[in-house]
Amino acid sequence: MSRALVDQHSVTKIAPAISLLIAGACLGAALLLLVSTGEPRGSSGSQAPSPAIGGLAVRASQDGYAAVARAVMPAVVNISSYKVIRTYQYSPFLVDPFFRDFFGEEFPGLVVPREQRAMSLGSGVIVDDQGTILTNYHVIEQAQEVKVALGDGREMRAKIIGADQRTDLAVLRVEQDSLPHAVMGDSETLQVGDIVLAIGNPFGLGETVTMGIVSAMGRGSLGLADYEDFIQTDAAINPGNSGGALVNTRGEVVGISTAIYSRSGGYQGIGFAIPSSMARDVLESILKSGRVVRGYAGIAVQNLTPEMARAFDLGELRGAIVASLDPDGPAAAAGLERGDVVVSFRGRTVASDNDLRTQLSRLKPGDRAALEFVREGRRREATIVLSEPPAAQRGPARRR
Image 1 (cartoon, rainbow, N blue to C red):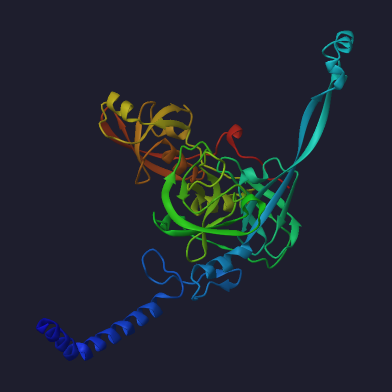
Image 2 (image 1 turned 135 degrees about the horizontal axis):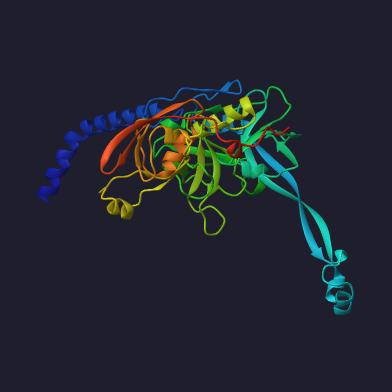
């Protein structure tokens, strides 16, 4: 009883001090909440700038990522491509043994050609004020007609300016002025853990925004394209998102959504996007030349596996093995030989054969590339001057 009285007396004496502390804590929390609201911040924690998108800027607001989505969505379009598929069907007479025996199996009337009009759905991103659209090659592959639907409901035909199957990219254009367009960002600044938004047309439903993070960088050897340097993300990407925009929290396009890894055909947490650094190179080359102009090194490489490294007594060395050479190509002229292990290219460590192929694909005829390779246990250096590719390896001409 006496203890209870003492405690009650002590509480009565310190109550004003406790009240003052609580009031101060509430004021601090309110100030913290006020500072933390507003525009999303970059991965470094500093407030992000506001880039212009179609003449409008992403402004700081209390709804965070919604401001970024609203600014970019008008620049993302739905794409419908149409192609004619020619099939062959056996005539009903073929089931009649008498008819088949009388006219023979090779009688022309036994096989009837049929044409079927097929449509595929995808997405695209308007990247300039001239109506230029960046999308995936597989969205418009073999298309006889391409239509684009804007977010405001307008539909128009698009012309295929050029395509690059080796990176799965294509460039379209619509004859319409003053369309909202997105800003191409720098994918080289992305880091694992950065927040990204995927905007596209999944399952033909219309404009849809999903959010996630960058799960990995430099994904390759997936069998999706010849040159692979994918951004991996857990932002939900589904069929129909292909060609859509992957944007950072500043509203800049850092990738073109391309593929998903799935056992069911739907989203399972792993999506891939072509980095904007690669997409920008393809875009600029197609707009300038109607095709992608790549330098030719005259070299074929394969991955250096741990087993092969042990067999060559290379220890933990990583790189790409020269599997074959064009005897008249730039690599042979630089002194490379079959069996050399390329470990560094233009000052950057070569992680795999896919890594080296992707780096080579970014170079143009006339570019010089210093590399380091290992031969018979010794490190050596060489410089390759890339040339024009042979005619058989050049990309397709401009489509009009």
